[in-house]
Length: 130
Image (cartoon, rainbow, N blue to C red; front, side):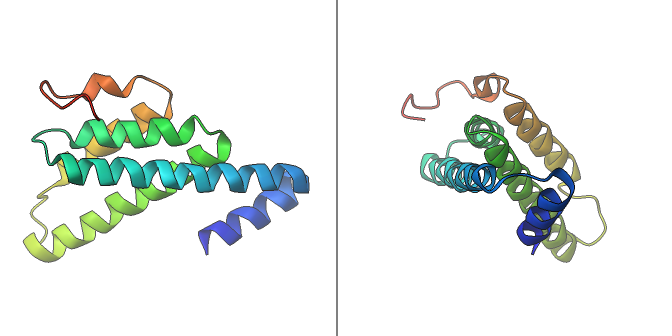
């Protein structure tokens, strides 16, 4: 639904041509794959204190695709953090459990989307494969 609303808003307000829309959608699809690859690598690595690195890397890779990739990275990152907040609240009540971690994740997401080097968050000893 957000995608449809975003497309309609941009096409009406910005008057984006159909060629640009195709480019935007292609970038968004590629960015989504970049985010999935970072998530899959994080699960495979299962390396302590590496989640911020993978957050930053996924957002960095997606944003490098262009505006569509950056948009996809933001939507996916925000959805992930919002869903985590809901599940944490159900598990732990209104204790604030996980709020600091969520803020740190969002900072890493923003860092990557801004084009800064995701290796800033890379933990020592993480295999070079990642």
